[in-house]
Image (cartoon, rainbow, N blue to C red; front, side, top):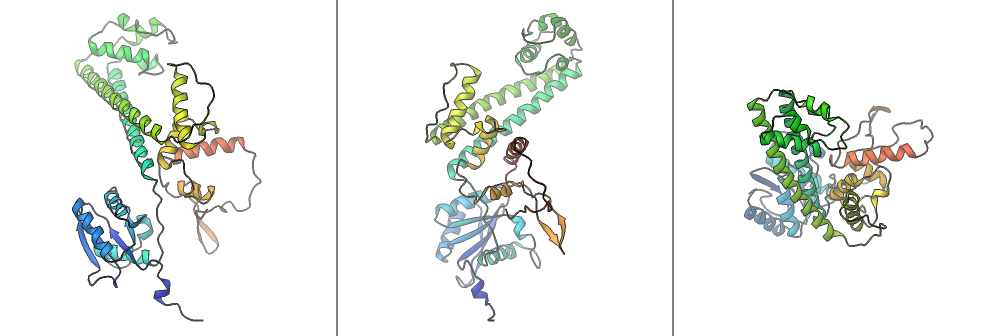
Length: 379
């Protein structure tokens, strides 16, 4: 049998490799393309355009880009706009680098692996989905920040022995907010504060009055006022995020899905219905009809990956990409490990896992398999 030559193994003969950094990027091209196959470029926009010009002049058509933090995003976008096919590569695929490690050797090793076809490109949604995803993730960040300031308000109240959490289920509900705002405004009388009680609150007025009898210390009142101001400021930014998100989703809705009769205008059900309608028009189907998927889960799924799943060959490929499939680490016929890999997008995996749990609870129990590790990451 004839021995395979190195030329026969080359899959991408015109591939380049880029080691991405914060202040500079090292680029390696094939040795046959230019006399000096490794060059360093800065991180400014003009430097990125010069990098694209040099790659095109060297005849490069495919570029392997290491996903380093967020520094790869400007490089990816500039090269993609110039017509180059960019492969975003997981750094874990190149962690075993032989020899001494340096930026020059990293980009050369990346170029070599890419030319031999040993790398797999990470999937990145389309541009419209990336825009929605950025706004949706910013909204999640604001929600987390707002929750932290609620905890600070609760801490200030407890330090003054104002046991509002013992009589109210939601401190930032209608009654809780009215009481806290009255305290910040200067009201200290427990009886007057208890008058803000909504009729739907289970605790009586006397119980709320007793819970609002505490020690009014100036330093804790100051912190409470600061936390409430931050809460209101974040709420204003959340409203801007919601408006921007709804505008983007309306523009993406190319279909008109019939969801039935709409609830009356101004009701909470109508707000949820409008959001369902916008998401259904984008996806082409009402995903909230699936057991286990609510509006929040559907919003997260569509904002992360979009409605087009044609990039995944099968459902098993999709679950493996989410990090929900057990791994395969077998040596000598023994299973060494079957733990799941880290999710490709941690923002999305919990929603899919919740849906999978709801589906399996309703589905019939499958027959027991003798090999519990049959499903591998190659799904």
